[in-house]
Length: 249
Image (cartoon, rainbow, N blue to C red; front, side, top):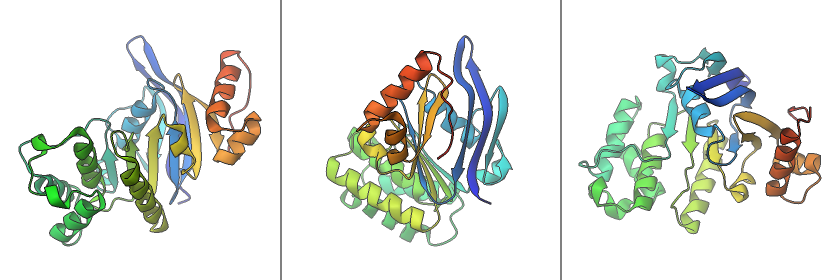
């Protein structure tokens, strides 16, 4: 199976809002794929459709070969939402161990929780209740909950918001180690400097895929020095009604 995720001509409406407009892309296994675009571009909607939390109005989404939604696939996926979905009255450790069990972890739950807690640098707060944590700490706890059950595909929606620069580097180093183990990561962001860390990128705006490729390929196609400039170039092409083709490179 060459692709972890296959999205074909997906449309999604929320009443009068056309959130996704015929979006198609294919994400290979074992890479970090970045969904880059401004707030409201459709990134979160797309991730929720990949997870089966939302159904598209039309089109098809397959994850690990299964058409979504598919409950059997959910245990093989990890998800970190923008807003931490944690239990405030439970401790950091209790939250992480709970998500390890719900995720169907095969192995020592306590050991896996210890490793996840250490990764996000919360060992000294493992016994703290989540309601006692700062916003950045909650973000770190949420990441630990998403990866503790060792998923095959990890979907991260703005994972480094509120995280200090040093810990952000550690996160990305761990993401690369996960890739080496065959895990596919799909990361949404509007921070262009993080895009350089992704193997491939999809520029999204207004529910459409503007362009797709590696960072260097996108800069070269746009004729720009930075990814931010490349994004603006592709957005201007789209706004002008250009028939600029969206192709994988």
